[in-house]
Image (cartoon, rainbow, N blue to C red; front, side, top):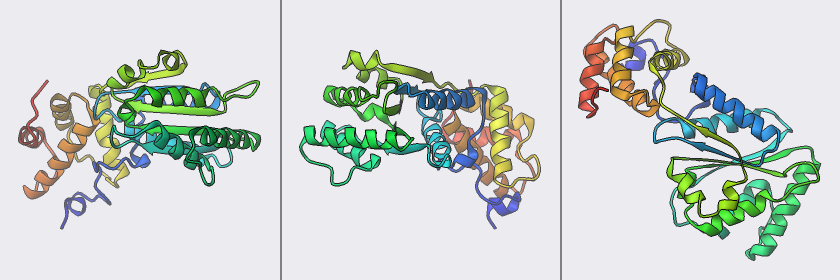
Length: 274
């Protein structure tokens, strides 16, 4: 028997995969979602989402992707995940071209940019908005990359920009962007994510349990408060603590997760109280 079966759950509620079903509508995350959607729909061009590790940037990017894709015929949207800092401007441009639907992207940069511009015009004439979401954008660490992004953002009609770019990254992303001050001046929206407060932490835990099929309160109020004390409201840490607490409570054959179990697994994970 798994802990999911033991607690009457259909799946693990605190898995690390960014499943949009588990997007918790805290005031700040919902506010970020609404602001970014507005920036895209009004073609502001460049939006930036800043947040420390574990605060839900990747989750938010997947939720935005899911929301835009659900509106058929309105958006041409793609999500790029940058996994290392050695990529070049040429690589990024080709990747963006492919994601926007450019067929046989050219190796020559000037030709490739022309192809992308023509494709952006085609997308616009079809009544769609082109959107590129870039997660882990702090891996973009050369000036020429930011200059090329700025160049793409300059493609516009007489009334609006033809490309929306949303960058997601930790605070150091802002430092790298300073390599191209004209790009920074083009930021139409900046959102900064912060940890959840205590009430939102309680709501986050209970919401994820419910989405996973929970029909009862598994974490006591005291346990949720203890989770907040050890995780400081950082969603990634909340997931780690709660997943371990479910497993430990299952091993100990407890019907509910009390504060002592949360404290035990938190210490085992090397966490300390606020």
